[in-house]
Image (cartoon, rainbow, N blue to C red; front, top):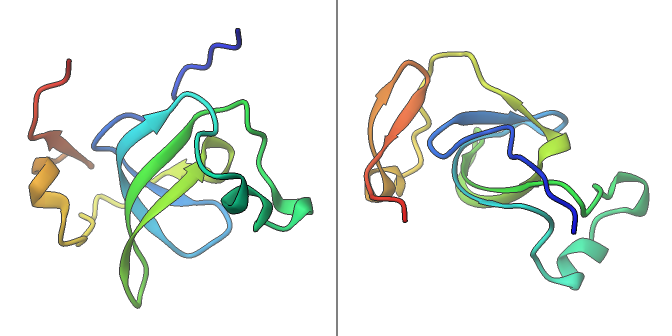
Amino acid sequence: MHTSRAKYHLGQVVRHRKHPFRGVVFDVDPEFSNTEEWYEAIPEDSRPRREQPFYHLLAENDESFYVAYVSEQNLIADYSGQPVEHPDIPDLFGAFVDGSYELHFQLN
């Protein structure tokens, strides 16, 4: 069994290495856990390794808000100090403090 430790935490603001979007981590899969169709839709030379954490993000770019599913290798921490404006953030998180959102719910 392969065990990975997530580099980013719930509430942390991150950005994509290649594409112009950023988001807030709201869930983490220890390794790829999406559909084969999703994975196969990524060009083969750009496909991330399956055996790494994948992050669910409340994401934003200059044009819209959405939910993104991104491999750890394609993320970097966002140190801009700017909040993410995704409209679903208040449903999951509290205040934006020191570059991260406080959890608005209890973890098991």
